[in-house]
Length: 236
Image 1 (spheres, rainbow, N blue to C red):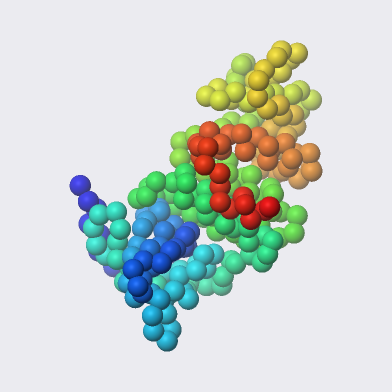
Image 2 (tube, rainbow, N blue to C red):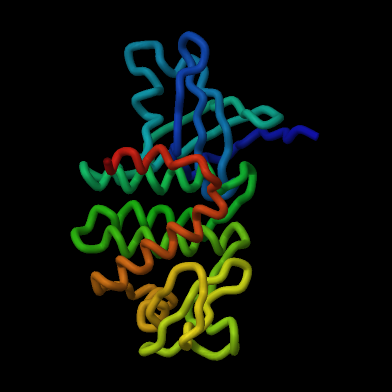
């Protein structure tokens, strides 16, 4: 059954993606605070002296109104809602990466106000020198938790006890982190000190950032599938 919606109060939102639709319109994927990810048709957005397309840009906080039913709603209002988070090159690549994660992993009409706040936070942090990689790893972890695939970096899945800084652990899908303890495992190995910092969201050391980046690539690949992320091509 199609969703029917007449929205009467402007909703905080960000554009995740947009593409041309027919001669003068746009198809917009937006991430909203109260309604999650939604699809919008912005009719006539590419025409006129002050086209709406100039407002419907990624990384710009917006207030949106829409109406309609089904999977695609009709946009009725879009206006700026504060200063742009637009990161400058090369950090803009991280912004597009975060947007693509939301598009690939997040279903429409699944509201997560906390994750919307996390999204604002990561857009801010990737612009701060020295915080980009840590911010991306934390957002990836929080995104997985929001969609029901959370990980527990601070627990040994084999014993149920907290991980220990001086030990090494293997990640096992559907199980978690298991102490290596001389045993042979297939998969990725991570130091306990890194897992503890990841759980506390205090990643700082280069080795911690390297290990968690490799770890999250393995974990995310399982949910993203084999199709490569388009945003990763920007890094090449």
